[in-house]
Length: 266
Image (cartoon, rainbow, N blue to C red; front, side, top):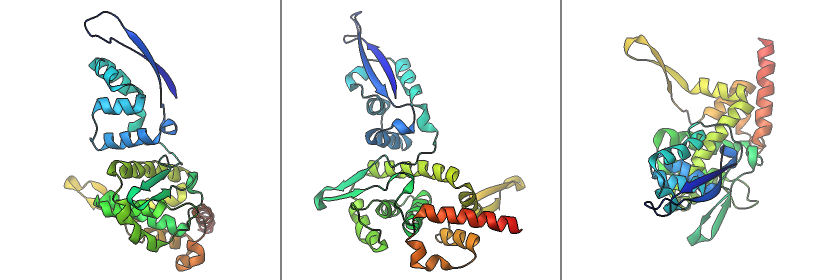
């Protein structure tokens, strides 16, 4: 966190200033749930600069309105990190509530701890689908795949029954969870580069544009994770419930080891 001091004139035409201190985030690790929602709104052009600065700095809106455009610019400079999606392995929105149902759902632990491989396949597939379709149903199913009741085991049948309820939650919160997972994808690509490099290879189809310049086009296959797994292992054992129930990090470690073994044999 960074401590800042802001000077402002309570009355614009009186040459008297006051000071106020505030602690502001310097990186994604400092960001709170409220701030993440504001960042998601900024991404979607759904928030004013003043409201964004209020959420990020904690400063009173009346004070922010008394600052000059240049001072607003200097404050915005502090939050330049939001334009750079750095790796982050924790869910900032820790829980969501569906008030009419009295239903509280919790995010997984950091580094996808506790998530099974089967759960990850569903969540990551709906995440990729929403990137392409921008269909809220995919967004809701993505969140329903990840957020569960406390100590509730994952069951794909709940996705279908629960995504309607998730759709009642403020979309800004849902978009914030989506943004959070984008940061986690950056972390996954660093933690398991062999696996996620292969995923990109299997989902990229070369195309040709004007001037015969090859441009990669991303076509997401809904069965991509089954194909990735088969690419490493060589057997269609992904359909075995035993494998689907294993922790995703255990599977990723196994897949990485198999990739290295296969590479040594070539």
